[in-house]
Length: 160
Image (cartoon, rainbow, N blue to C red; front, side, top):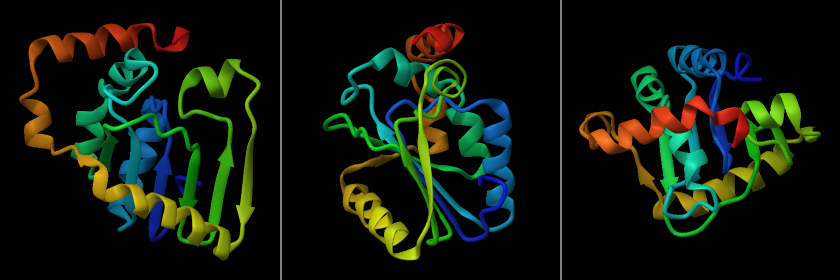
């Protein structure tokens, strides 16, 4: 679905550690004019900060591709939802990481229904004002310790 989006691709996922191919697909979507946004908890709101740090490893690449990243710092947002072009949705137990895709017995339901997609998009929009959008220049200036944590956590991301 990342490759089929034409207008909008919005993802909410608590454990977001995309593979390079998924990042490339999101970047290609942005080049096609797709509004690509990802919302996830910040380390301060996560029940597993190490997973968030692992996901941080590829944020710079995603930001350079034009993917907009939003962190929700208040609590764990546990929705696992993706909407595409306001007509197709995915909802289920699958996290956006290798462990969910390759190891766990996860399930996601694809739904072709504009009304349901609108409802999921409304949930996304409800949380947007309380999110912090990550900006590339600020992200590049984060501390050496945070960069080290991201690389160390990513090295074991399939175990997290």
